[in-house]
Amino acid sequence: MAREIRKVGVVGLGTMGAGIAQVCVQGGVEVVGCEVSAELGERAAERIGHFLTRAVEKGRMEQADRDAAMGRVRLTTELGDLAGCDLVIEAAFEDLDVKRELFAELDRLVGDDAILATNTSALSVTEIAAATERPERVVGMHFFNPAPLMALVEIVRTELTADEVFDAAYAFAERVGKTPIRCHDTPGFVVNRVLIPLLNDCVRVLDEARVTPEDLDKGMKHGAGWPMGPCELVDLVGIDIHIHASEALYAALREPRMAPPPRLVRMAQAGLLGRKTGSGFYTYDE
Ligand SMILES: NC(=O)c1ccc[n+]([C@@H]2O[C@H](COP(=O)([O-])OP(=O)(O)OC[C@H]3O[C@@H](n4cnc5c(N)ncnc54)[C@H](O)[C@@H]3O)[C@@H](O)[C@H]2O)c1
Image 1 (cartoon, rainbow, N blue to C red):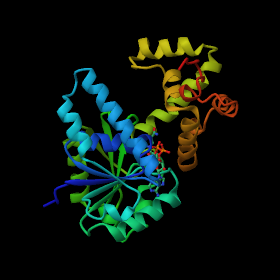
Image 2 (image 1 turned 90 degrees about the vertical axis):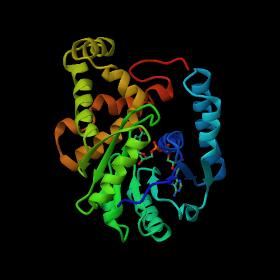
Image 3 (image 1 turned 135 degrees about the horizontal axis):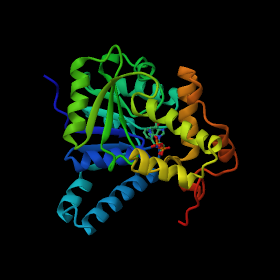
């Protein structure tokens, strides 16, 4: 019988970790969020509070439910405070050494039957798990950005992940309202493995067909039923982030379509990173 997941640790409360913590507390689960400084932790809690307040204002949530959810968030800067967690989801920097160090420490701190999960997008879950003495209790739980709004979570198993752990991670994702899918540890997992080369093709078509970003986006929305055009999407993700993910996939699989298109690299060099810098394929006011 899988142990019931009552308390979840989230390591790193940046873009993804804060969103994952929010998903958990909204799902009725206690969260201990760990950041490198109290200030960063508080900033994340404020972002969660703000998001939930907007949900109340829009009539999507009761004030009492918002307050109860916020009451389930505890902040710390000490990894040791995650000792009583049944599941720890790591969402720290995308750096193998950082993650391996964290997993080795978490392995020493949490109970023997706790599950350790990483939200990595492009690193090997297997290599992260190998930093622990419990690789059978390590999985990938790959949430999508923004985690509170995107339904999908890829539940990623290595060759060593125990079935019971894999099933418990899947069940947990469902319990907090997400739509999980199961896959094995391979570069890009499922969605990024397909989407990244496809977006790179879209960028290359801009030059090949001499089509404008506006027309390409119209094409994919109205001809292929995409909810958002590829140029809008790359701007939203961040051109630097997309390039980084492309490079990681290319390094792992060596398919030319995975290499970042030169046009994107030039945009990044010029500081045109998309929405976050106010301009990418499009310009933004805010
Ligand atoms: N941003 C995305 O679109 C996205 C989507 C899916 C998965 N991911 C993955 O999620 C992870 C986090 O990405 P992000 O975009 O949220 O990054 P981010 O830089 O916004 O947040 C990372 C946070 O981790 C904290 N941190 C670093 N080391 C720590 C430690 N030892 N202890 C506690 N906190 C620590 C940092 O202070 C920072 O606030 C990465 O592995 C990334 O690949 C990102």
